[in-house]
Image (cartoon, helix red, strand yellow):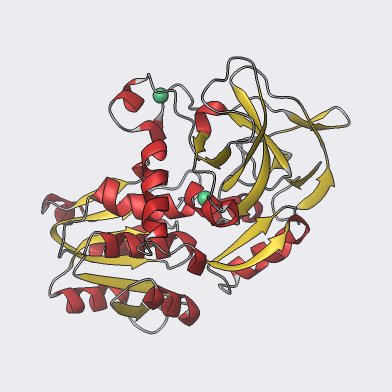
Length: 355
Ligand SMILES: [Zn+2]
Ligand SMILES: [Zn+2]
């Protein structure tokens, strides 16, 4: 089967034939149907984040159909439609029990590789830029049979990371004001999370005019081009002193500082963007003491088996936009071009599709 492999940062991803094992105990073999091209994958290519090990089978956002189940798997069956969760959930650890399965303690750390080529191990998490993938059953969310997985694959990471940051993590109240730094695939979902939460003002901040246009389509009410004006000052003006919430959805400490500086007393900056490996974030301690908070938000504090299903319900009702997130579909072979489009800010999301 074919898979997209990163051999070295700062090189093109190569699409090659690899071998995949049958699922072991607790694992499931999926035929991938759709995979969203997410910035987190490109972070391994551009060096923003250091991969645990190389070569790396890429992709983490995706959906597929169960082809084979390993020993002991009872939660899903052959033929089930699955939207993958970024995080596997044991259901028993303290975080799972307390309602934070995205931070399941049992499944922290890597998974054994089931993909190789000529005897060389290719490392992976829950790869989706691949025709087939072996994943933990604990990471599978079964969705209704009439779900279009080429669309629903986006829920796996980008959609829940954005919407969940608003409704699960920050718990934005009706009427609250919020700013969103970065209007890419995840940022647009922070914006539609704000719409769901009935935020009073949703201020979109980006440097790319096309992304600010998308932000408007997704329900942002105010727009700041950070190339032309100081976002902190503009947000303070628009909100009359600072936003209640500011979401950093790009992944740079300097932007977290800006987000923090743009929230009012009692407000919170929420770190959604994947930060560079090993870098510190600093803020003014006096500002922090005015009941301001900085909070991290991992994967939208997702309770995947609950959240993915209501997101699909609201999508069917026209209250959540998924189709509009997809700028184009491409075959796996065009993964490098899809990354290129993303880096240049030409697309909201590209979805890789498999026949
Ligand atoms: Zn992602
Ligand atoms: Zn757990």
